[in-house]
Image 1 (cartoon, rainbow, N blue to C red):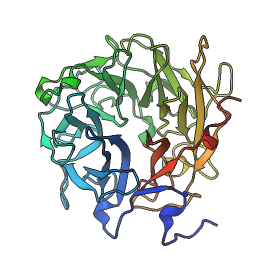
Image 2 (cartoon, rainbow, N blue to C red; image 1 turned 135 degrees about the horizontal axis):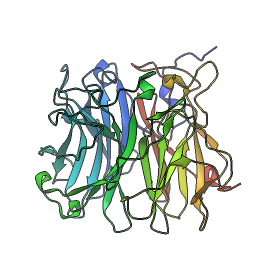
Image 3 (cartoon, one colour; image 1 turned 180 degrees about the vertical axis):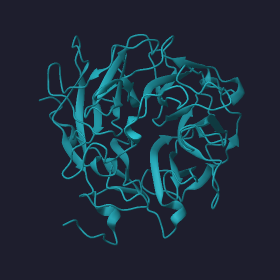
Length: 415
């Protein structure tokens, strides 16, 4: 028997910090892609995509702020659909803070022309701020490079999303990964379900953003050069690729390490020795060379660097089969969330090795929120501040919470 919903249901995962708990307001019921970052003047900003329910057509970006990561303001509107509207959405925003002090938020912008759906087909929208995020200016849309998987009509936007905070490459340039789904017009391999849409992982590098240019003057390099992204074969159909939501870290040797979600039941990874210009063929991620593969349903599985040189992998430690649910039941198999501490191993085939997984947060399988999901810690973020490491995570894409990642969670980094 599943537990009953309690008045203080947001406490189920034992969080240390509460950023946002929805009130009795359907408009604020869905909260996801939760990115916490530091502003130019040293405050903390939390950015996320909010809607009445994911896929309903009213996605918008909101921002909350804090001076100490403990007390958070009520969220304010940044971009996208207004209350009661449908269309004109802003989805899956991610921030870049330039050295000049200007802040940018880039997102999938719904312009009313839809290929796959209204929240992944879009231009690359941009808003920017020169006053530490109190006021946001709408910038011009950012031109995106196209490839043969896009709709043949250039007026139809790409099918794409980004979601993680960008990192700096070996030369100090901001870059991030994104997912591209193939247009229905160019890819006719039969699909099994939502989870089998042809997709690849690609990257973008912001070459001059630290100078704080206006959006129309941004210089972006689309990566990999001369390639169409990282692909992972779909089980039973090698012509189809499902490789999504790339998460990047910079290794001590200057290479880039990327992990991706797939539908194989495992995390896959790739490595670049030239700042994303080219990548090794994706392989299944293991705890160490020749070790056990790391299980994961089709869910985000980010890896984060720590200031002390270690890494943290956030994942769900099942292959999609969880109790009565199968791999396609993403509303129910994205739990519990585990942490595994990783270390760089010089000379290893797989450059990051990971320790035993530790159960970090769970929902006990209780569904809540407008989607009726039991998932947890999908599309989180991580910060280190005043000697404390915090994983900021959505609980059932409803509550937005933070929990300290203490040394007890990180000890025994390798078996």
